[in-house]
Image 1: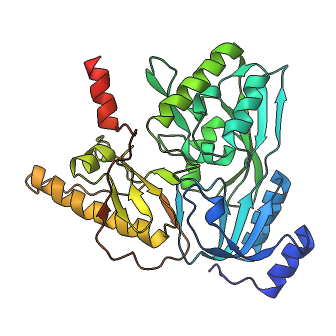
Image 2 (image 1 turned 90 degrees about the vertical axis):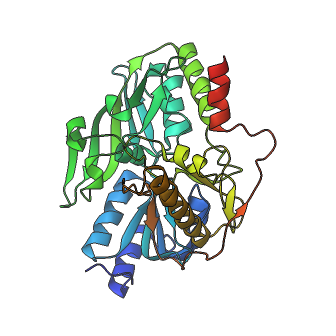
Image 3 (image 1 turned 45 degrees about the horizontal axis):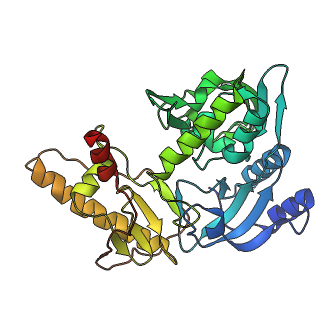
Length: 357
């Protein structure tokens, strides 16, 4: 059974392997997440290369430690009490490209945008430009089969990262270091084998094709603009993207909007007017505020759906983010309804404008 404590033998092994100053205590995790929420990790280590990442994971497993591998900190909510155990922060970010083959190799902690994608475009290679604006590391991209509705202007289909993955170096749950092909990942929509096996991606190789740099830049700008109209800017409105899964193909945001819950705020957490399925940190939000708001939305939406379908469907709103660490009880208060900020255009307003031509 994994332990959250770090025994003296484990401390000694980590310090001997990485240096005494690399293993740190009581490091607040909020700054390392896109939501800017989260308490301290009991122990914290940054892995700066794929080799260090493999050594850190092996040591954690060897000592049967309770550990969490942190990437860009997207799509997760870390509890206010932090993480009882070891957080290994993947900062392995080396990138190389071979112009003779069009292969781009990147360690799993490298940020997809701008670092990986800009490297490809600068070298004149196409295939990754479609995935700009989505906060993700290379490892995270393979974890969720990163995707975007592209290319502009038609946006006729969803493009998936699996289309350009050639191979990856992984540390398997059995402790074996392997190079695997794209089929190993059994990619699906927001899904991969990484959800079901305790494998860790150390690096990945993408097979790209020569492309027109001007056209790639156009795609980047168009996709960034498209996303900015639908998602709050992370630098001023921290969030984790969509909170809830679709219900039988119906977007959760549409149902939440029908319930009149845009602008609902508990503490520092608010359902944004930009997109009803996104909650933002308005400043000082706690994980307890977010969970309180999630529970309120779930309760109201369930009542609404039951009323609409005569209480026969059994629909239930499920979260699609991961909850990491130790949590305080949800904030127990009724939400305050905040007005729409000036200049913000909602999804419904965009749809109506497009329909009106």
